[in-house]
Image (cartoon, rainbow, N blue to C red; front, side, top):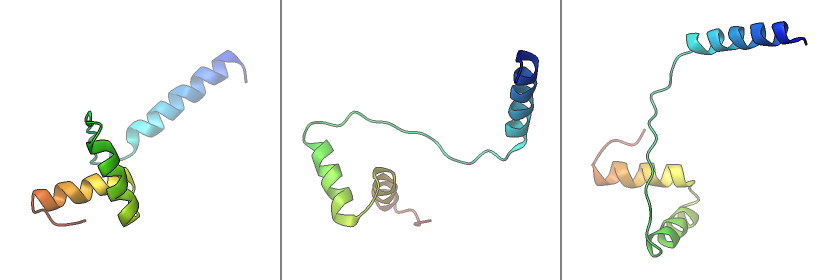
Length: 68
């Protein structure tokens, strides 16, 4: 693939991705204390959840939201 073909490919990919539906997801992050991190990891392990799923469960329960 020459340089021109590469740039055309990248333009086409960008246009294709721009047409795709954007998912309704937001990113959050937090600095956890040395005590909180192992507690979260144990919570995940005990329930066979990923960190993402565990945090979603914790937040939906805290805010009394329906589980989706």
